[in-house]
Each structure stands twice: as structure tokens, then as C-alpha cells.
Length: 279
Image 1 (cartoon, rainbow, N blue to C red):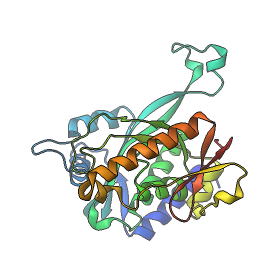
Image 2 (image 1 turned 30 degrees about the vertical axis):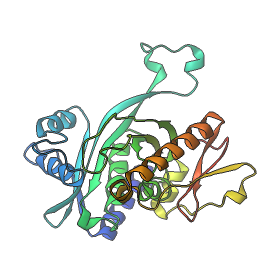
Image 3 (image 1 turned 180 degrees about the vertical axis):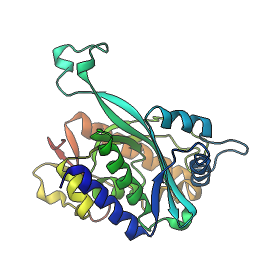
């Protein structure tokens, strides 16, 4: 069985487990579905919207990915991704320039993926990402990249354990000030998930979630704790939420500077980092 066939089978199993179906929104008349989902998941300021249907039309026409999850005919989640590129490892030392096409590799940059509140904790997000993986592999793309808030524990578990991504880079206030109902008032720090779609971690996670790790199993490890529910904490105690942000920022930046990388999550949902483990 090919990697692509195996990916589609894993995606189908995930859809069945979540009780939903997923399809790409290639018809311009359907692309407003994703717009409405994004605005429900991240409520914007009154009268605003995160993306417009004509932009989604352009993204799909130029090779991007726009899809929605449905419970029967009811939309319950959506995702969009654009084709991006990154430097291939090793070319920097060879003097590769931006004009040198051989120094770049195409990937899919997953910009938005969300599930409405009523369908959270039903594995819909996992199903959407596995559909995205199968779609990308079918298009000859072997890597998907996206940013996520390192303080949101459910996203960390999804990305690291259920999908088998590698966490790289910590970007303070990556998006600048955000004015949606979830992120407003908090610096938009992000880490990046690198998902090597045909890699061992992704293939293993598609079959069963990756287990918790124990920092004691590593000779030199660091543990970065995160709050139980940062989204609620931003509302109930913004000062404490900001303290968490600054502390985790400092710990991540220092660890990455000293060649530590995320090797997994412990049973408490904290990040475990060890030296020389990035792949």
C-alpha cells in the first residue's frame, strides 16, 4: 500500500470515528461555508470577517486547500491552507540565494483550522488535519507547516501526539495585536508545527496517538509547564495569563537557543525538551 493510499484510509477512519464527513470546497458557491465557520470559532469585531469568499476562491484556484467538515449537511469545522516554501537544509551553507530554485522546497502552510464549540472534543480537528495530510500527499506535497499558541494545551496534544508533528521556532507576537474574541489583549506568540507527512512520526500517529514522555528518561531535559486553560484565564485573570505568556516565552527562547527541542508532552501536558532531538 502506498503512503498516499494509507493516508486516505487513515483520514477515512478519523472521519468515521468523529461521525462527520470532510470535503474540499472547490465550488465558489460553497466557500462561504468556511468564512462562516471561521467567524464563529474566532468571533471578529462587529461587522468584520476574517477572510472573504473571493480570497478563498483565489486560494483554491492557485492550488490551495479549503475544506469543511459536516455532520450530515451541517458544517461544523473548516480549514484553509496555502502553498508555501522553505529553505532546504544545507543550502544556506552552500550560499544558496533567493533566486536559486534548488534551495527551496514547497510545503503547505495551514493558516486556519477550527471547529465550532458544540463539536469540540469529538476528534473533528484530528479528522480535518488527517484529511489535509492525505490531500497534500495526493498533490505531491510532503510537508505541512502551521503556527499554534504554545499555551493552548489541547492544541499541543493534537499537534504533538495525535498528528506527530515536530515543534520548531518560537516567534514572539507573531501576528501582532489580534482583535478576535479569543486572542485579544494577549501577545500573539506562536510556535511552528512541522508535519513531515510521510515521516515515521506522522505515520505512527495516524495509527495511534503518540504516548506521553517522561523527562527522567533523558540525560538532559527541560520541562515547560503551561496553564490548564489559557483561554479562560485571559478572561478571569488577564495579569496571570500575561505572566504565563512571558514565562513560557523566556523558557522556550532560552531552550531553543541552547539546542533543545521538543521531544513530547508529559502526563501533565507540559512540553519536554531535550538536546539534539529535532528532526
